[in-house]
Image: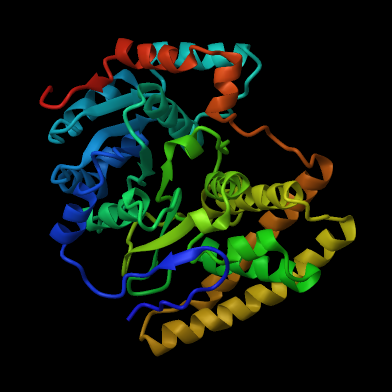
Length: 409
């Protein structure tokens, strides 16, 4: 049975008992007329070659409570966009296919850049930012949910569990983060188990209890890509354009809401999606790149939240992380052994060595430039600089043929 113990300031909503999907969806239906929901799926074209996305489309095609499905397609050609239109045609509801590289959309991004607002590099962060702009510009939804495109065992129950705490006003949450166990025949979730958790523990060891570190530590899977957010909060949230997206999202949620309005919900007992290669020798790829981005944004959000990161503290952090990571490996080995799972301790040690190198590089970058690459601005800031930007973006999507009403092909 899932653990219902509450740790830290963020309420955890565990999956204690199975609930029929019909019960979950009927409860959502009670509130959806007052609190419409849009679902965003950021993706790249190769997801259409994998079985996971096809399964997601089958499942969400059975969901009746969504106002709009927004597919934010990035790093795509015209042929990829045409294929995406066909791929998502089985979904019967209203949808927006937002081709990030469409000439009208690229022109819109350039206009925002020319107004002095940086939108970062193309990638998941920009895809989510554009999708959020579409949802806010249309003004149809009260909440927007985000779902990764690579979940192999996806079911519509996962979406219902993510959405219900947001739309039910009796529990009153503005930001809902999904969590789940990353396990099959072995433990996954290396960035969380072997980087985030021990790194936060190392900070606590060095500086004592800090509200922001306690907040981050209370998330059971801080790096999950699934969350739902109220639109009047989403419009105030800046985003990272790289793999620091999840850390920055948590920081921005806390910046604009008290922890009592933030929760996390268990979406499934197991969550199976694409596993990244370690790429120990190449800091620009795989988990190595992800670890670098995560640690850079963690340092910058800590500093922004008032934690004094002196050079002495940062030097000590490397050693403290090493110790905590060694304990994390021992814990993971015990969990795997007792549950009869495969466990390659040597491979785990290599992961920690790679993460330590990523941390060292992040410390060097932070010391040289504490601000780093600017975050993608929130939409309130964009509207201040370009008041009609919402309508401009929608015009660009319409011009590229991306808004498809329910029942249309």
